[in-house]
Image (cartoon, rainbow, N blue to C red; front, side, top):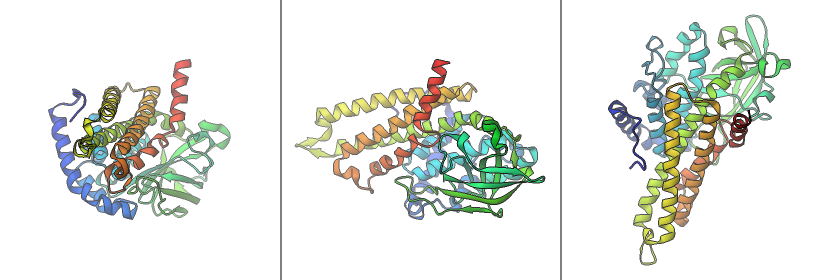
Length: 385
């Protein structure tokens, strides 16, 4: 049940959503427990997503994609994955298609695009992006990873941490300083490939949530990256990052509101069935009012999310507005998850209950893609400019 009628989708979108739901119920939900134990989704799952055309749907046909230039289709995938309660896949697949792949698609050379995009679309190759370092989180200018020009290649040294899809990744877009003395203007983007000598991965982290997401540390020791793996122009990496970050933050925001809506509706059903003091929990004013408060917040959040989605579809979503969406909707997701745990009582703290997982999975959303404190900094700059 939608709390607010959504008029931004047409019949074709609805049909696509139905096919996505069927696929997720068949190919994702039954395997999520196993993936959580393994700390990663299976390689077979990536290929099934590719076989069904669910990876990089915006990529032009000349590179093997569907060429669907309508981000509402991407949003449907993001939403339905988040609503499934399978948070690891809900983060990993959109990151592959909507966050990492665009760097190559929009800035890579023609040779690079023809070589790597087809494998990204089939799921044969998994994508990751590596910006965060042990000593530099949201402050990208403080990164220490270097890429020294050696003629026909760059010699890369450094490390990255908290890398989503890191352990399975075959292609990693890394940010490195090609001219350290030039600050932000000295940052470049390189495509690192699995099997390159000097490229090593740590074991997947033991995380509070997102247990099916293979997050790990990456190490580069005298790593030789061919010049043809430079993404765009040398020294333009920071510009490319700033250009793509609004979409990344929108992806997180859309995931947040969908996950919050899903656990809210599950909690409504739980309160209807759970009895206390001689009747359903929903007979208690304190419970009814709490549900009313959450429904109101979610309705306003959904309206803003859909507005941002349509702005992005028209190429009008600016950095500050995307930051507002990421900050407010991830905060809302955490608030809703926490309230839903409370309404479940002791059962809400049991891992076999979806609400416990929703609570644990939500917390990191306020941290990655730029912390919510950084989002406020970006928003304030626009206000005070």
